[in-house]
Each structure stands twice: as C-alpha cells, then as structure tokens.
Image 1 (cartoon, rainbow, N blue to C red):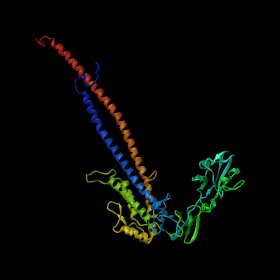
Image 2 (image 1 turned 60 degrees about the horizontal axis):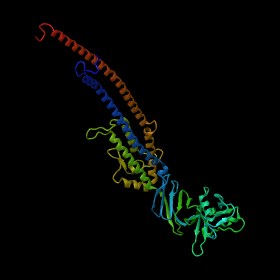
Image 3 (image 1 turned 120 degrees about the vertical axis):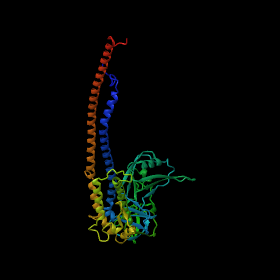
Length: 483
C-alpha cells in the first residue's frame, strides 16, 4: 500500500517536521540575500539622489562659468529696470510705456536720450463708393495682384466672372498665399447707404507701400494702379506705409518695423507708443543684480546638494545610518568640492580671488553662507569693480570652470557615478543568480528529505503491521489469550 502523505503510515507528524527542517535551512540564506539586496537598493537610491542634486549644481555652473553671462548687460529705462523679462537666449529685456530695450553682453556701457517719434505702419487703401457688398464688380474673370512696392512680397487672387464685392473680399482674406493684406467692407448706412472696400497691409516700412494691379480693366475700381482707366483704390498720405522713427541723442534713426536692431550697437530697441519729443533715458550698464542672482542660485543648489550628501552619510541621534555612510567616493567628492571652493583663483585679482573676499564662507555642515555683512560685501564688490567678481567665476581657471570640470568626472556618461552604479547592478545580478541557485538547491534538499522520511514512514508502517500480526498470532496461542 503506497503512502500518499508523510506520516499517514506511521502516524507521526513527519510533514510538519520536514516543513520545519526546510524552513530552518532556507531562512538564514534568504535573510542574508535579502539584506544584501536591500543594501544594494538603498545604495543605488542614494547615488541617484546624489547625482540629481549634483546635476542641479552643474546646471547653475553653466551660467557661473560663462564670461558672457557673468558680464551681462542690462538696459535701465529712466533709471529703473521697468518690467523685466528674460529672452530665450538669456538676455534681459526691460520696458516702460513707450519703449523696451535689450542689451547684449557686448553692448558698451553708456546712457542715451531716446524719444519715440513715430511707429511703423503698413498701407491702407480705400475704394470709392459701391451700392452694397453684393454689387457685382466684374462680368468677366480676372486677377487681382497684391505686392509691396519693393517687390519682396506678393500674391494673386483669381476673381470669377460675376463676383460681388463681398466675394472678392472673401477670396483675398482666404488666400493661402496672402502675405498680410486684409480686406474689409465698410457700410455707411444712413439715408444714402453705400459700401467701401478697405485693404489693410500688415507689412510696415516706407519701402513696403501696397500696390494692387489687375489684368482686367473691370477690376480697376479695386486697384491702386489702373489697367485701362482710373484706379479706384487710393492711399491717403496719413495711410501710407512708413518707418518707425526714434531720435537717439538728437540723431534721427528709422526702421521698417518697430524694432531697431542696430541703431545702437549691442542694444535692441522696440518702439511701443509714439510720443514725439518725450525723451526716455536708456542706460546700458552691467547687470549687477543678474550676476548676484546667479551666484545666489549656485549657492542655493550647492547647499541643497550638501543637505542630500549629509543626509546620506550622517548617523542620526537614533543611531540610524544614512544610505552611504562611510562611502569613500562621497568623501572624495565633498573633499574635492571644498578644496576648489576654498581655494584662490590665480588669474583673478587680489581682493576678489576667493569666495571669502566677496563675503562667502563655509559653515559647519559644509554648506556655503554669507559671513556677517557678507551680502553687503558682495554688493560693494559688484559696484566697485564688477569685472573682478566676474573673473573669479568665469575665467578659464575660475571657480565655475574648475567646478564644472570636476563635477563632470562624476556625472558624465561613463563617469564615476555610472561606474559605481554598474558595480551595484552587477551585485544585483549576482544576488539574483545566487537566489536561483539556492532555490534549485532547496528543491533538491526538500526532495531528499521527503524521500528519506517517506522511507521511514513506510518502514514504521510495515513494522506496525508486523507487530499487529504478531500480536494476533500470540493472542491465539494457549496461555496468551484472554481466557
């Protein structure tokens, strides 16, 4: 008779015994592997946090190590920055009601008196009177051609036979080739109502006067240049295309648009509202506040990095260790950063060749902070000699370049962080492989235990059967029975 479950034949709790032996064999190894897995996961997470924080420091260094950024200029309008905004290339634009100004890093420091005499405008052509918007303009098909006077922009509109004034206006406005001409119909109403067509060109500048021609004399009424008779569209003097006009220090300057890119070298001006004779003072100066903000942003990102590094390497009051306590790479990283930030820049000028000389110093936890009166010291340094502060960070051997080069050793592809995480990935694979091998071992171990205890169970079952048979035989012998 086969035994279907351990202990059935012998009556002993062999199934429980095998389970306990398997658990006793399995638990220590699994706990050790899990501990190793947890250590690797925690370390990987720690390095990920460290790299993320250091990458933010690296992002700020792009500005700090850039001579262009650290020598940036700002245009102050009427002695104040007005409403500042930052362009896509990082330059600061300031504006007031009449004018906006953007100064590039190569703009010379200077002051200018500027008045907005006129804004640029496009042409506006007006037709004679028509009975209504539904009046048929041409009995036969033709073409209206629109162009700027200088010929740089143009498009054609096909006019079908029997087209009304409204049909033609719609065709102009819906043309895919239209470069910026809108057609509108003005209905006068009143006792003698009439309709007039108006062409408005958005292309500004004196050389961009609107010219409308045709190939069908019936369309002369809608053209500025007639084919067979008199042109019906006229452009009044005040509606002619014209340049924007500024007066800069008494000199008249013109632009086909409201933007003046080269009226002043390194400065872009945009006219907003014309106010003839109303002078605005535009002062191009070093962007002291912008540079101070850049330095403060770096300090903030560096201190956040130190918070992360300290949290990962410190032991707190409960005795719990950070994920990277005792990690030699983190110690080396912090030591290298401290050496660079605490050192002097050889090419910088004495008095502004260290962080301490502009008011910054290390605090107890390794973070940077202003010493007492340090912010005032930085403000004074920027005011007294802006270039000295710039050189401290943006020279080839400046703090920005040194830090950027040093940090890239860790963060770049194939860098020290990636090398370290590769080691952890290998360890994870090794742990997984050990676990798979151990599971195979445990399968064999369990099978052997079951075979041994199944044999024991069978043997005891047979012995019990034999004993029962002997007891039966002995019970039937004289003197062994119950009588």
